[in-house]
Image 1: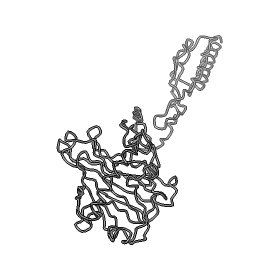
Image 2: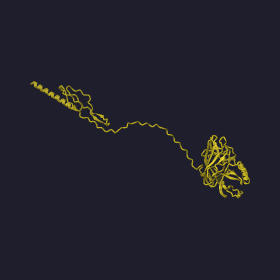
Image 3: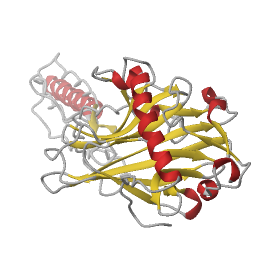
Image 4: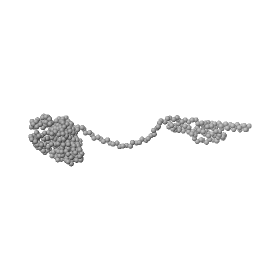
Length: 390
């Protein structure tokens, strides 16, 4: 890998082939500029929206650094349609170096013995190269541009780093440089054959077209990073990847950019509206299982000894008391109910000489006893009357 950066050279006139090449370039480039309506057009490029894909197989292109909304941005100025320039995202592009870009390295004898192409391959090797401004209507002519920048935007040059290159073969960026013996030679700024990264510095107001060479057909993906310093001292950069289809490749089958399909933007998940959680009503927790209690059973009511009452008046008897109904009483221990004798209700008034009601348990015996006593009394009284009459 070479030095970290290289600055675009200024050709130096020398003897021999060098002067001839420089003179040819000095004539050919202005003629190409005049012949290319896209270069002469002074229209303002439109901004292509991100995602507007394009396959470019001819035309004047500028890989440009510009400042947009206070940030450095890497864009491609597409001049493939005369009079209609477009700023495009590099990741939306496929550059097609098709059959018109095919080039065979000449022998030394064919170019006056100059070994200038030896850094690229052997005589007879096939390469695919940019148009060099010869005919941008049939070939691609990509270059650099910092024409929109000045000292109000940045404090120094833009560094363009070839950070990554993927493909089936070698990719080279070259510049014309002075050679003391042959006048001109290739200086390689980017060369994937000797390792990456490689970098080049672009001063303000640069518009230059380096030489692009690929040595194998196929699909390449090239990642460039542009970096610079804002007047505030902040370091800024922008990096992007574009695809290149070289040789006998159908560019319509090539995915732009890094080759990965665009991932759909995630659908934001709506934030659920918080809902009040009802507070559970506290319930008493039993401390233990209640043991079943024996159901209370009414014991026999002790019989009451009847108290003799004055003898009833003849012809009257005390009516028996009605039995009191049993009332169910809730059992506290078991939660059920068991029939217990109800307390005696209000006593019915007894006839003169009768016995008081004592409850359901003694009502009938008491009535019978009272009747017996009354009958006995009456018998004694009758006997005494008979005795007295005698």
